[in-house]
Length: 388
Image (cartoon, rainbow, N blue to C red):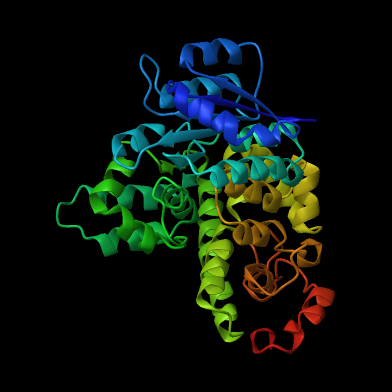
């Protein structure tokens, strides 16, 4: 089935340039170009698009308003904002409805990469209901006590950047939200940001405070206190897994980029579990009760139609995280299934799953998974210092 994409921009010259640039892909994608957001809304009332790319600054109805309507009408649609670097206020307003941000003038390679990735995401998560759930996420749940401590600290005029960065780094959800924004092409950074500390330094304390206190990029978990404890344990488990994956990569002599990717992927590895816990609390409790009698992955698939690794990888792909991080989250338990078979972030995240503490969702005292022996032998990891 052909993928569909809608471009909306009141600048007719820009739309015509996009049409010329993408003419060679008409056999692969069905592309519609609309120069009025009101016309786009009328069209969206009658049909669904896989991807909607909208300019931010348009009269009567701006990009943030348009994408909010797209979210309401078609929650599974990938939503992208086109915006200029100077429009920081636009970023604040679009941070909820937009999955990704592209800077203007638009890089043709960025559009092509976006289309290719949105198509691949369907292969990661086949269930339409879970895809809609992932695409409709505006925020991820954070432990209530951490959220309250963070907002209280931000209200203190004497607080410094390091303190805020350390608090955000305690939580995988907050870190993911911040990395989603800072790694967008809106900022046109020469390299990927992989830690909360880097993100806070890049944005600046004032901008982070505005994003948290006014744009609402973080959210306090509101569910049952017992589930809040599980969420806190999951977040701590993710932080520990990220640090262990980074340590194992360093012990194996991996370069700085791979170590950073391993840390980021390890920390994000359980993010799908946070979403399932938040969206399906009753089913999640039932699943945990059964987890001790079988592999966690099988129990999750039976309960939700997919594992939290699949859901987490889909979300990170939707948010524009780099491919090595997405692959490491998706194949963390079964690295042999990944087409890319070189040593990388996936190798060290898998080893961290094997060697690290038991998941809060699984049986006590057991690792998350068994070592993929064929994979380890094929890459020579079975003789590496990091697995001894």
